[in-house]
Length: 176
Image 1: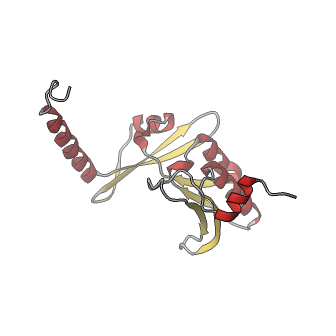
Image 2: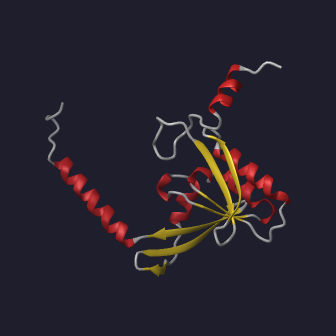
Image 3: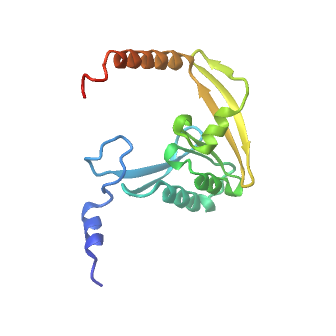
């Protein structure tokens, strides 16, 4: 059976393909690597995919691959590329637990709802305060742990003030 041109190109390049670079390096081919680890961080299974594989496809494949394992508890940890409501529902199937990093200023409805909730922050370290927010919907319950860094707040305010003062020196007609 003849191999299509696209298939031949993939075989020649292997997994290294052009995809959405997470580190802003669109000039390099990449691969995606996933890993299952014990609670102590010991790897027990690894996966690799072409660099242009969609995050949602990865999480479903790994969850399905691990279905036959005799595991007492699985906690999924992933970055913000996996935070869609569809992915969260998929991870919750069969009592799954997850921790997904998300920029709360990203403007998603869930993040906005979590940020708008009242509640006290608990002091965890000198530069870290956290509070838990639970959002209930018809589809599922989501738990957000919101982290606040007072040092970063001071640093961010200084950067904003510096930017504002730099713009104040630019007159409207100077570049026009």
